[in-house]
Image (cartoon, rainbow, N blue to C red; front, side, top):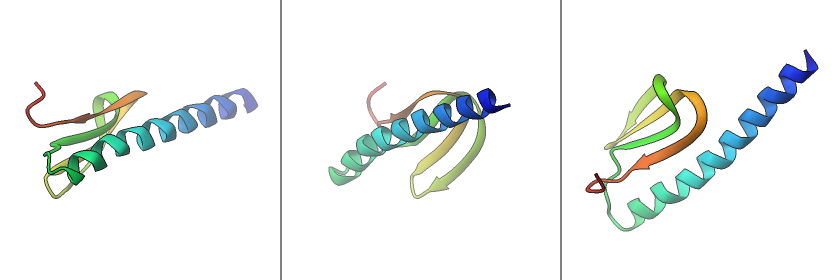
Length: 74
């Protein structure tokens, strides 16, 4: 049981670092007036999502990274 708890703590910690990193991308885009349609922590199917202004914030099922979709980058 302790091993599962430790693994969960590591995953939460890594995702906290990822979230802070992606928040840096998001805040710089907003500082310079670049639209960001989506901010996601994790990949795959969506678990939670909420729309704030023009940005959709997503928590996805696979906690292995994250991204900020920047308008015009496709």
